Image 1 (cartoon, rainbow, N blue to C red):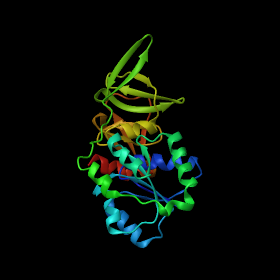
Image 2: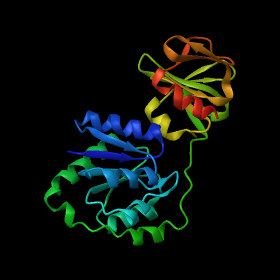
Image 3: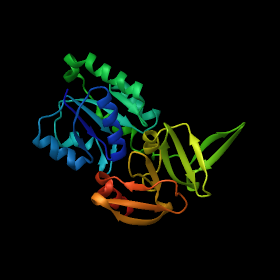
Length: 251
């Protein structure tokens, strides 16, 4: 199966790729904008299946199909509300609501495989979907988390959090007052739920807040070491493959 992902949020694209690889589905290409997609489709053999985000950094993804004829099956990945998803149902389009649930992804792939012989006969009416997207829904990110302490439920706002980290199969939030709280989530889910302007996953273990960075130090093998305002339990190293994106995020 020849598969590509078109998604402007790189953490979301990477997470989807990991989920697909768990299903033995290899991703041949990851594309991040309308312009990049048009150029790619103009110069490459079209894939069997596209995982397509709706709202990209330079416009709606439907604009791709105004420029090139694409003979591929499409599974939409979207953060839009039910009013848009209803349009997808009417047009017999598979869709996944972000953050993507692994079981729903498996079901969507199964639907695709079941209709492979007739997939080119499915007609997608992008104009009807556009009409429902004239006032697109703004992406809503998490503002607070809850954690259980004894018999009590504590609320923690994102402004209080310096970093999230994984340890011993648990996910923790470290707050500005130096405390650590166990959360019922994973770093992969947090990548989808946190405002990307404020939080960045620097390696497999840490997601850090831009407000918490006290110092950035050059480290071995072209990596970076971070010092946060209060977190001192472990070294925080920006993985080499994420240094470039990290520097762009800082800007």
